[in-house]
Image: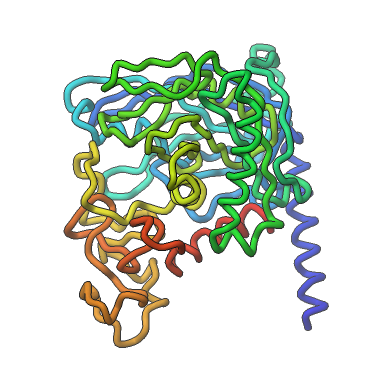
Length: 422
């Protein structure tokens, strides 16, 4: 029986690769656009298209069935009107819309979507998740792959090196590490930090047992100065990716709005996920689903920061804490089920981890010692003390007191690994 099952899997894989080869070339088309708005309105506008030399994604799982993220895009073949590629993602603009500043002014942010380079005319549709949790179409753009205005020149060209490579990018999770705030004299330190990144990531389950499903490459790109911006200290550094603490006026939220530099630097290697290492000992980091993950390298919690942030950027996991100083207003609608796999408002708990609960586990679950090591429904998460629930009393997505992801988060990470690598 197993023999026939493996034959079936083989035929399905061959069929999926044929689908890729029918519609796409083995390189990337990056579509840059501008996202403009305030706390209630948003507008999309086209910027430019760039050819990137590598396609690091899957060639079999072309359609995103998970539909995680605040946003979603679909690529259609124009002749057949067949959906040939899709992905969910989130953006810094989407988070900014919940900030105090968004209530007072409009802002424009550069964003990108990437997908395999199409062989023929296609249409890209952009969707945004409304307050009710439904995707609404906001914008579309017709692509002529023969258009001579598609940029073929390369910016921020730097050499890459292999941190760990286990095989073909088409069936691995490909991470590209970008250096931020490392001078030319500190490139040796960056190489050492990439080794520490690898060791830190694979020291936590379920990454440990999936080590052979990952490729990690890094880009040797120096900055003029060490560190990152700290606006509150009037500290401004000349760095290649322009990262800054105090994003949304939250001290430890370390991010960058410089989307074009991030994407152009990442294009030096095949990638599914972008990870930025920042050369500073000040505590901080951040991550946005299918955009980038970021962490500091000199802090004592560096390894845990790395895996926590990668939980956000790679698997779409939400924060399970609720007592931090965040710059968000009503980040979750308590009348809608969150898209994050490890959070629930109990509006549609059947779609989350209800099947993983033991029969007599109360819903919600009391925050008592008898339930400390058990999967439950504990109130407090997603920056809210009330109305949002998490799977366990503690987890790597809540505090750094322990060294494990809870079973719900582990399952979500494993599902994402399998999506890219199998």
